Length: 94
Image (tube, rainbow, N blue to C red):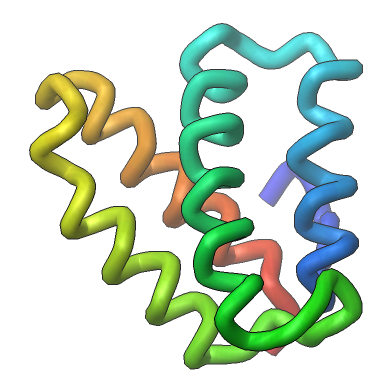
């Protein structure tokens, strides 16, 4: 892993996603992070506020919403979003 960032709360997850815009990341990463952020916001509002911990239930809710929305994306964009989501999950504290 090149970046040992660990994300424990929804607030730190938002901070991480926002920080991507200040880094030299590619357009696909920015697209995926913005797309996923909307699903995070939707799911997080059902579980608590931004101070809540990243829970298995929250991650599963986000994953379910992303899966259901997959048909909204082109196949290429879907792969980009899924790959970013996998990378993002690896940063969550266990």
